[in-house]
Length: 410
Image (cartoon, rainbow, N blue to C red; front, side, top):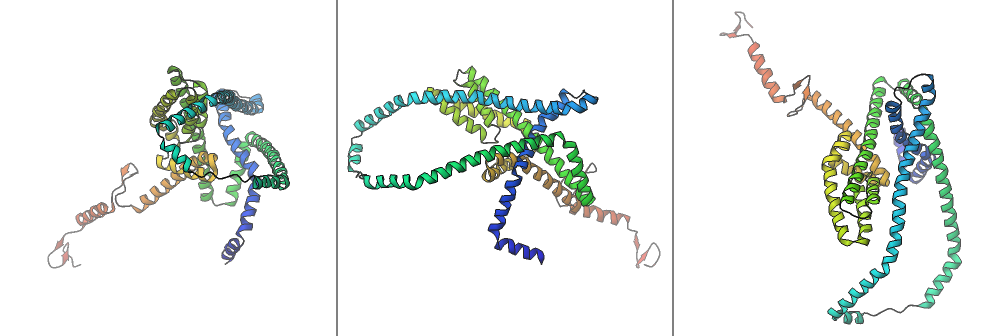
């Protein structure tokens, strides 16, 4: 009854409930972002600790190993971002200036083409002359401008103040998130032990073990997905740089870096980089832009059929249809971050559901289910009943005429 009453009140005051949830989410959002930062930084930091400084032992290692690996991880991530920004931004600025210079020539060609169409098709002129051009009401236009200057100046000032406040708040939240991530990485073993002890203290043993199993699965899938996605993006970008350089296409390095960066977005990321690269090449040479699109489709097929299944597909363990579903749902709900977040989450849910379904079908002996149990294949219920009936007939004692069994009355 209390639960029903709480649900009814939540439905009646749904706006207040959602407002409270949004308020609480705004409070904890810096810590959620910090946790995501800590998870991403933990991958290279763990690599430095295990592979680079794995043999470093002793008191000095216990004191300085974690801070050194954490600092190297931050520097590595900053170098990657600096390379991407330093490679793409200058090329984009230079291309934008070139586009500005080429626009007048392009407009002249457009005007020439329009003149040619008018000469070749005189009926277009008659159609244009038939159109009634509306006259501009300068009095209403001037009145609208005056009203905007009177009433819109305050709105513009308020909007500017809101934007400035939002920028400052975002910077503060990012600083808090980064500091929180550093604390989490510095004390991750202690936090893990505390969480494990809390679970075992307040929950049943089976529930605690299941929660820890799910957390381990989530960590494995998320870390494997991030590692595989980054490796796949580097391979794809390198392929574009090499092939575009061989075919003497312009902007080879910039397009390769841009495609490698956008390829971190599953499925649709590479096409975003292709659209930008094709537009940049189109300004210089339209025919080369067409060849670039063909090259992109070829390399995309190679990457999708050979590289991605080996690098990312095996690590995630999710069929292609569910990858597409996860990208669509995650992108609709949370944008690009949702695309990245929903694939390993869906993979974990898929693995848990598959394990549960297999266990239930194994216990219930589903007809036609084929599996492995104790090294033997499961058989259908009908076949098992036939075998059990035959064995019972063989083991049954012989009946003698007259209703006797083994010489005795039943």
